Length: 297
Image 1 (cartoon, rainbow, N blue to C red):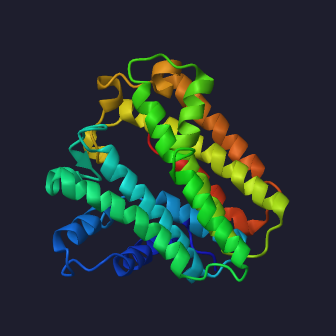
Image 2: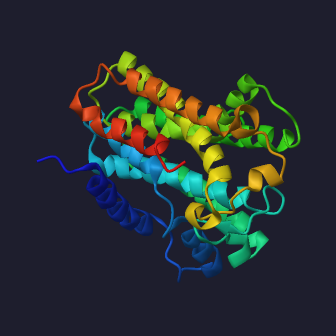
Image 3: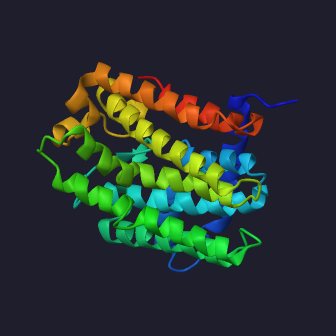
């Protein structure tokens, strides 16, 4: 009997928390404060959307769940490191993340910086230390994929464009370019890494999953922009309205709330279309697409 979506999500979130706890350095090991900050930044918070996408893509590709655990953990560690650094005074200067004080507020700026650095390197250590594929070339491709998604041609580059765009009016293609890198690159990587842990998909099918990841990554950001305007801080677990306060270009500032909602729905439909040729094994990806776009906004 197929487990319903909410129970599938809850079970994976609970189990994955244990996976992360096991991979992170124990808090009593020296340097204790750094390891405590790393655990603080990762554990007990977040919806784990990126790991869930990896698990769902792994199901499509017939992947071993223990291998997907490694890939999903690597992606989540990268995501957590990016949040630690984004929240620091030199970036977005925020004090709330996932419903609790940001890492640099709870610890200090230097410790938060080192915690982010250490989470990033731990992610790549996991991918290099564990066998994720029986094909060594494919595993190297997975490392290259995450590196590209993380660096100046991916997430970090998107953040640089974001910082440089404060107070500017971007066109829609410029805004999409920024978020394809800042937000979308890691979401695409999560989907592909989960699928690469399996062996049932050919190159054309992998290309379809990549396109799905691109579309749903953009949709994720559009919905985030709407929620930043429409939801309150308690609901978001982070400071609401900060994009407008900081003068950041968003889909809402460009299209208005209704226009942004319509764009999210269009991206949602296109993402689902890319999965049309897949059988019921892609059911969780379809449900996650619904979850990402139909969050309360």
